[in-house]
Image 1 (cartoon, rainbow, N blue to C red):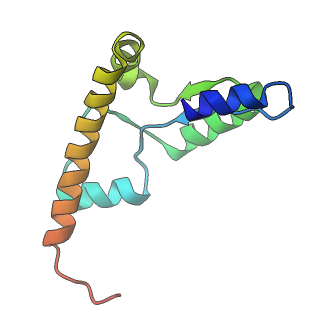
Image 2 (image 1 turned 90 degrees about the horizontal axis):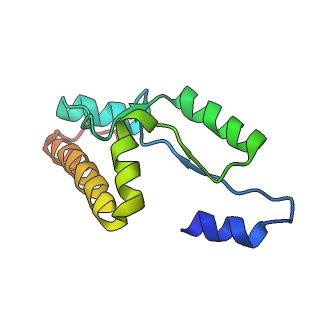
Length: 118
């Protein structure tokens, strides 16, 4: 909603606003750390995408100026469709799946011995 409002406010000014929705970026960073700690990947319902795919999508958004780009489209397709008719239900499904994954990561990190690097 924020991006849509900002896009409307800036219409005609030469400034374009696009929302980039990548889902989990699975080739490094926080995602890899969580997988190492928990031994589990994100739910197939949530899927994942590469940083290169996100970068290509950002480039496309800059060139074309579309309102929204779903980078992780195939796994999220049912939720995107559901969101059109039942936005709160779709939001809840995404939150539940994300929280479950992130809770496992937090539990795994809490159980790791201190590394002494701090």
